Amino acid sequence: MTKKGIFSVILLMGLMMAGSRTSAQLRDYLNLPDHDSKRYYLGIGFLYDNSHLQVNAHPTFLASDSVLYVNPVNSGGFGVSGMFTFHLANHLEFRFAFPEFIFSSNSISYHINYPPDGEQKLTTKQIQSLLLGFPAQVKFLSDRIGNFRVYMMGGINYRYDLASNSSARKAENLVKLSSSDLSVEAGIGFQIYMPVFILSPELKFSQGIKNVHSRDPSLQYSNVIDKIRTRQIIFSIIFEG
Image (cartoon, rainbow, N blue to C red; front, side, top):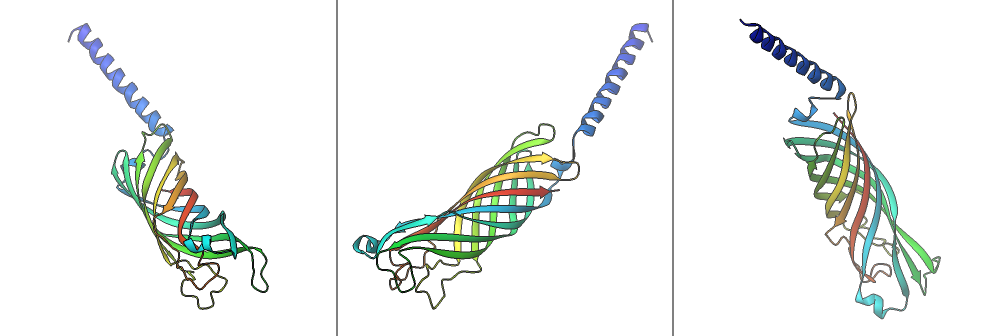
C-alpha cells in the first residue's frame, strides 16, 4: 500500500472515531435519548381549571320584571388525570385520559326585583360539579431541540358530572345542569426532557358544544335562561415517562 493510501485510511479512521465521539457526546447531553422511539408511554397530570358558563337568555327574561340581570361568574377548580399516549409518527401522537377528574364550581349572579323570603336582591347561585372526563386528543410536535420540544393539540372531551343536580326535587333555588357534556378542545404545551421523566406544562381551551341547561319553567332562577354551554381554560402540569 502506498503512503497516500495509508494516509487516506488513517484519515478515514480518524473521522469515524471523531464522529463516534460526537455522537456519544450528543447522547450524553440528551436526556432520555430513546424516548421518542417508544410506541407508547404513560403520564399523570395535575390540573387547574378556570370555568365560565355561557348563558343565553330565554324570551321569558325580556317579558319578566322580576329578574333584572343574569351574569355568569368565573370560577376555579382543580383535578388530576392519568394519560396514555401512542406514538404514531415523528411529529404525531394520539393521547387519551383514563380518566380525568375535575372538582369544579360554577356561579351565576342574579339581580332579583322581588326576592323570595330570606333572599337578597343581589344573589349568586353556585353549581358544584365533580366531572369525570374522557378526552381524546391528537398532538402535533415540533422537532426536538436538545431537551426541549413544543406541541399543539386538539380533540374532543366527553364529561359526566357525578354531582349533577338535574334530578333534584327541591330545586326552587337551583339552576339545573344535565349530567353529560361534550366539548372541543385545543391547546399548546412544552415538553422538557428531564433525566428520568418529561415535564410538560400545558394550556388548553375547552368549549362546550352541548346545551347543558335542564330548564324548568316553574323555577325563578331557571326559567329566564334558555341555553347554557360550558367554557374552560385548563392549565396542566404533566409528568410523563
